[in-house]
Image (tube, rainbow, N blue to C red; front, side, top):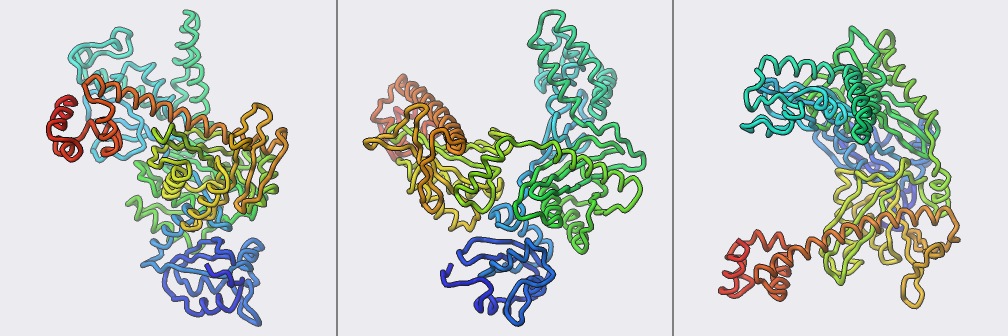
Length: 610
């Protein structure tokens, strides 16, 4: 972007004069080309001009909030994308916020699909399954969603009720071990009728609908195991019982006149907010979920509610509510969000802002829960996070980190690793491994970061990238992020080198930190900021090394197998160079082998492998 651009300049004014009156999405940029904000509009011309006053000079409009007025004062350039209708604009806006993480948009990361329990009532001997998908089949009954504890509930049901424990139990012709230990009644041998099985299933489904019913038999079994000195098994049941008790602490709340409702309630403080979700089915709150949100620039409630609804209902859901309750007036956005919901779910879901009665009471309960979560929330590392912002002059305090490292041995078994850290610690379900083709660390890092940027459409960017490396890696990351238009800051941590070798003395490793402007920071080895970043880097290193060792072991096993079959090292190297992996060699056709080896050798290799 041109370096001579200035905020609220004549260049911006000229662009404002040419904006069309169609639906679309707009982007605001500052003088350095950093993305400030993404918004959508039914009428681009009217919406964008509402941010400005034009006389005597271009300036922020008088009716803006302090947060938005601050943002407008930084706008040097705007771009817009015209779309066919409001619905397309709504979806595109949400997608771009998730991918690009603009400075003044609040990003909601959590848009995971919650699991459901599902049973096929047309089956002779149905099993209860855990699923996040919708199956295109008649006769299926779903229960949920479950924000937590679904697996523990399901395992407990199979522990207590003698249902067919595995799909194989129904296909087999002979009673298996489950029958011998009284966990299954052997429908495979006809030892139970479909009518009697249906009664057991009905009792199990009652526990799915009201998990508290399964607690007494679970506790009895735990006590029995303990008395028989089977403490490990008793401990497993103890942990399950604890999770089932927490499955829905609000399950006792019963609104007889309310059938299927979802409630979304946002509670904000200065720099913290929490979004509370209640899922009510058949008049009972069956599960609840919360999402913590951080922002140093305040919160736009309308934007957060829009993101939350789009994120949640963009997933294919087997059960949807008849109505959504939100303790906030969405105004004219209500109609377009209802249209979005109908397009996504195929059903009419109304959005209601209750003013009185049970529905208002339900929203107040959600708000009360949100306030309690904010009151109890503690983060012992908040001071370190704040000090990192100050040290590196970051735009905002980082609360979610992604840390990258690579590992290889003489250019072979090249792998990359990404670990994730947030307010609650290391987020292991978000860790990623990468198989890499590059032969040097710089090329490998480029490949890994490019692939991560491509994945921003599925999992949004963090607040900060931490790279194991120096100037080259930081410049590389900046180049890739700027090319993709992503608002994400980067720092590096590199080992101090003595005589061109990394200094790794335990307890005295003087790592060098660098910000994205390549400024160096040499902190004391006792500095908490350095120790925190070392902890992140070391975890990424451990994760990369572990994966590398697995790949190396796998390669050695493959190589040993080929040796046994008479395929020598030279031929293996030639085949690996062509097919890229041992799996590629194993799956290759004779014609493909002919492209690499002599006809005679190709036939020998093909026969040896098959």
